[in-house]
Image (cartoon, rainbow, N blue to C red; front, top):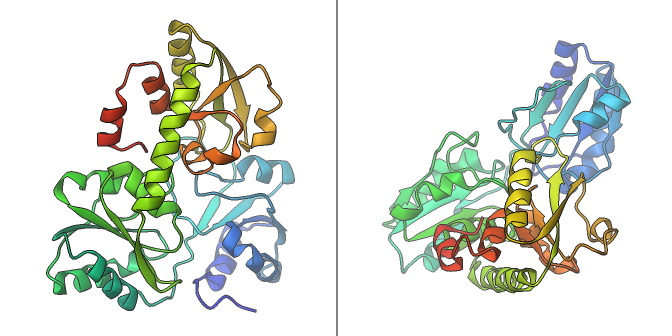
Length: 335
């Protein structure tokens, strides 16, 4: 059955396959769109190419399956659900991004959010790539409610007002001008990141659940957990520094600098390279008492409860080393 909510651009992927002369295509989908995989694979096959579905998790445009495509002999990757992001690494295999825009009404839920935004007049507006084409409609609703609306655009992300899991530069760029933020989109993941990046009141307007709510209670739980992890890590002697092996998550220079600074602070540190950062993978190194994550910062922030030992972000590591004050980190945003 065809997905009626997201625009999957079936005709376009056929055209791209023909344009590239692709004979073997690796299809990469986020978890919510994986059920569409077999149907999309059939469309690829109809266009004259062999389709291979990547069944691995896919967390964002930073998580391109390029090495997998090379090993499988694919000559094209079709990547669903995310917008292209600037990646310095040269692409060995061409990547087609299908953003999967959502065809869902936002008017009613943004109007619900207006009630939650009553205490504030200057509102920052943000969303994911699935809803960026509706930003003007969202802004108009807020304007009609008497709000002054700000939409950030740093040029680091493809669209104004867009946020992604590892980059909240658009909202940070307007944070000093606004009193609160409205995030329009599904789930809590991006809204939590927005709050943690700006430390400003954040209201979620979820067009899928058709409800509006504040994310603050959930965010404060994460903040308390972060401080607890920093305090626990202070007593650790042996650290593991996590280096992400995914295309857009590799920060080897930062990892080397953190290692140097930990050792200057009297700690020992070992570099660990991983594609998937899981509790099971980290448990293979029992001597390590705490970790510093230089891959996607959301690994430590959103999933800290699943790890048996503290996993700090880079900035939290410097709080632990007394080089940055926790209060300053909270003011600036911890993402």
